[in-house]
Length: 114
Length: 112
Image 1 (tube, rainbow over the protein chains, first blue to last red):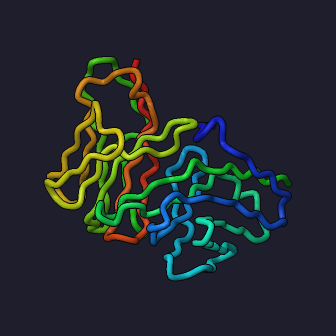
Image 2 (image 1 turned 135 degrees about the vertical axis):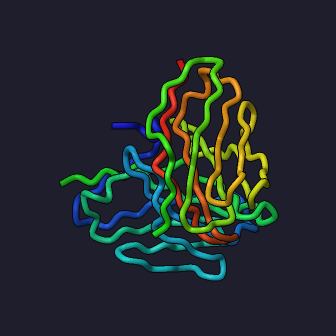
């Protein structure tokens, strides 16, 4: 299959366990953050977002946590499934003056072991 | 659901050719973006557009231009393709600030 990144950090998770993917962001003024999932051969797919006036947001099987003090974002996936195997990217809206321009992290590869 | 469609999944062109990559979105989004994605370098913004006939340079605009004649369509142009432009190209769109960008499935472009 196509490789999104040859040198990505990799998280190996047993099927059924919870996954935690971490991301450090760069700009303390960023006020909007997104997590994307990218499967092999596909474009990034929106998972969940969070604004800086929140520190936690939950979706279906996913939770995003935002720690503005240390500029850290995490994505938690509950009961990880084989279909969760993908590369996960965080993104921040770093420049509000430039509209909705996002800056992306390098990504983390998640491998789910059966 | 938002649909962002890129005209080609795979494209092979020769050095020096003029190459057009097309992107269409069906949700009346104001903002559209072109990225390239390379192993180890992540997603890098080439150009973006806020509205018809508007364009702004991203982080790596050299060797590229864009066209936005209609709201739903955003074209990326490689004026004279070079081998270092071999990459995965991704188009995205979004309605407004602080809304998620929605991506197409990409065009894998090879320049020989």
